Length: 166
Length: 211
Image 1: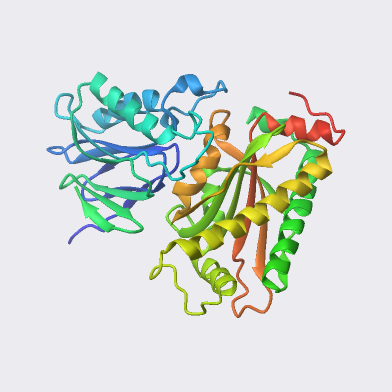
Image 2 (image 1 turned 90 degrees about the vertical axis):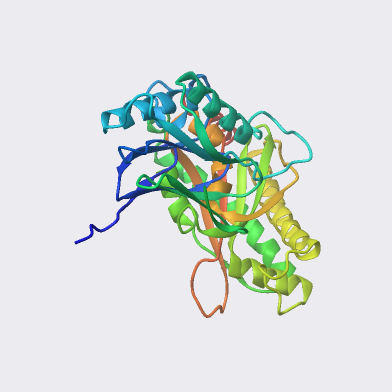
């Protein structure tokens, strides 16, 4: 009787939408940020795997909106609402933005990309007045995350600490 | 894809040759260091999506040991030396003489710095042969070691490329130890020049490439 649960995948610089009972996952977040925007009562969620903080960094014309925090959040919200989410009921969770490598010299802006991604995602969510219910950001570990739109639970797996719920 | 449309077969061959020379020297250095025969595949030059890049090494959440260094100088870029966990353990066992060594049980300083130094030597010999071949001034940053999900590690090398498009040009050379029971490839050298570096490399070798 129960439906088979599918795992919707989100690649690097990619986004997707999921409805319960299915779940949505993105793998191997380092400096990238995985952000989930969801409406719990409608059991719908969208996830983006953001790679860079701002689309002004782009050097090409045909732009992938999922790659940049400023364009990804806006599009993600639009698609969650299109899938049945309601403005004013949306919440967000996010994880990632690690600094995988510590360099003694030459910490250029690009090396600090993790914290910059986190800050940019936070600003964008604030711009659309979407509260961040939970976050697990920074540090120096890679993360794989999975969101369950039915319960609103975000599972975070790291190599050293196993799986955590939030 | 416009950036990549200007790449033709000649350009791809040059990148292949670069991988051949660089990884060839690195494999020789590794072989001398461990007193073992190391085999190397013909370098593969690919224009692939970010996700496809992760698939070369078992998917974004596969756990590996990787040494990362930034290439500085005339043609900046990124270099990774990626090992499976088993292979990293074997190299550490051979270097330290501790045949029971396992990464998950022992994360102490010495074995990890041995691995980091190994990566440093190999990447250094890759780069210096590349520098000799092209007559370009290339030098490595201090290497950084990470044992973590490959997606989290490699995405650092994709940042510069991602500003130009959704694809990456990677020069991939695989190595494996001779006489291992499993014939699997157990190490990869990835050379990821920054977008601006390609025409510098091509010009240094006397091949024009429209910028």
